[in-house]
Length: 112
Image 1 (cartoon, helix red, strand yellow):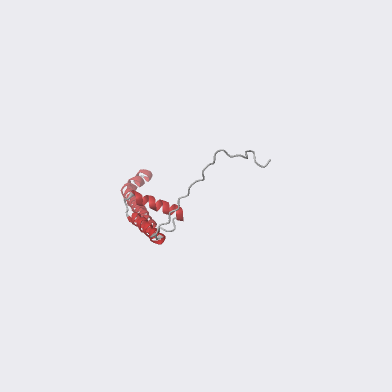
Image 2: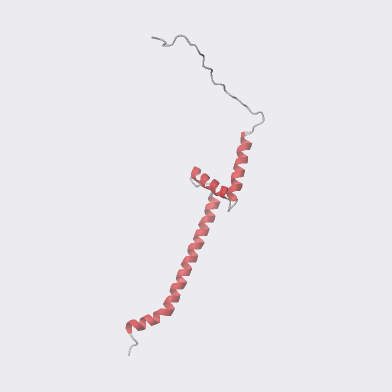
């Protein structure tokens, strides 16, 4: 039982392969241009494509490459934190300065 269908009535054509070899293609130049394009997109602050490029680059490389952007974001976050802390300290000192004498008087009396 070598072959179930020994006689072929129809011959199925083989697939045709398309091979195109470009004559003047420089893969290093193309890669360099793509990197420059991505870097330019990443530098633009409000660009949506730049944000997408930073996120995809960070996910691909573990976030280790885009140190300049990360440093800027950390500085902004630290500035916000310091602003909030200073504001809370000023508000607390003001409240204590105004209401502490009244609180002491209400708790301990006038002493007479």
